Length: 266
Image (cartoon, rainbow, N blue to C red):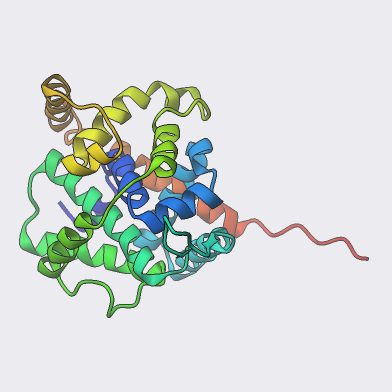
């Protein structure tokens, strides 16, 4: 399996809920989202924006990467917080916080891939890590800040997990996201399965932070979903497994080729 095939796999999207909840469990990010974003009420927009950015940075041309970065930066401009007694100051442009965002995307994608396909070989794992280093750089994470290698990342990850916490505000955002009544029918219909997969993929102590119910029965259901996925997903034709990547890249390329509407003269 090539790196293109690994990073383009649609099954990695199933770990998106895990990434978002891990981001929300950082107090600065969680309160920045709670105070300045309504993405939980616009789940399809959040999904579209994240996938467009990830696929553009990983597979796009320099022009497409630049366009994706401009769009993300524009969306982040109003997301600022001076901080309170309960939450530190937050800026969507903070390199340390953007590092955590990129780290959650990397670790969640790796976790999901290994559950479906098994562990990567060292060369594949290093290349996969390199792809997400590029993603971090696109989020304005300095190279010096990103852990040097996979071993350093594991140390960073373990340390960051110990500093996570939630409160009523961030738990409310997570609940709205996982139980949203907005978005298309297919998304709302998939929420029960999405909640199960998200809770099953989270570290147990983070799952507890968000008051996500778990039990032996839920663990058995999660394990059964993973067994079925391992049996049915890998044999699918590549055009199906990579359909989201190809779709979002087509949309991005179409938007770049469409001339902007002329402004009215005054």
